[in-house]
Amino acid sequence: MSTELRLKKLRGSGGFIMAQVNDDQQRKGNLGGPDLFLAPIGRLDVQFISKYFCNTCEKDYEGGPKIEYENPNEEVAENLILKERGQYVCTTCGSTIAEYREFQKVGEVGLAKPISQEQPNVQASNIEMSAAQASVSSTTSNTITQPADSTFSSITGMIVYDSNAKRVGIAKQVGIDSSHQVVLIITKNDGSDQTIDWIKIKKIGEIILLGDGNSESSLLKCKCGFENKTGSKFCESCGNKL
Image (tube, rainbow, N blue to C red; front, top):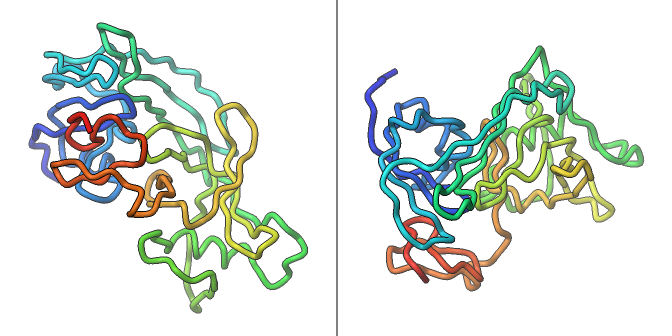
């Protein structure tokens, strides 16, 4: 794999940074689409950050933002250790540019299970298959089938980020709701559980990325061509004011 560094724009929930990254870091930051996200990459060496943009200040700054982090070494799920958590902070106003979490797997992370025991025809392996294969942009059917002789991995323990690349929790299990629809149960940052409709999941890779759930008609299109969610004040791609 190439170790050549390339200058890239890395988006966060409160702005973006311009930094030199290698191929592996680009792969981690690519959650689908043309944009790269800072949160999945984690902590960068400040010497590779050339400038950043703060949404709160509405301006660019030369150099990198301040990086604050801690190493809790906390078990957040079965065989999943939170090694480091941190955030990129504007040196002028103190606003958060991006947050990140770095985890370490110890053995195999726990398996997903259906949330209802009253669904005898829905097996955990079927649901895990859906989790491993699903792509929200192409998933329109609620029918779950499993081809023979196939092996699938669990999404339990994966970190869940919203459409602004902000961490919202950890995937707890996949199940079926009262309407017989596939849902994802996550443990939120405050420890409570939340049910998320499967159609709201945008991308599954090393993490789970949620979409904003808006239809195309409710999106705000920037002059650069990027479609932002309703209520956005700045373009999430180029940073221009909408």
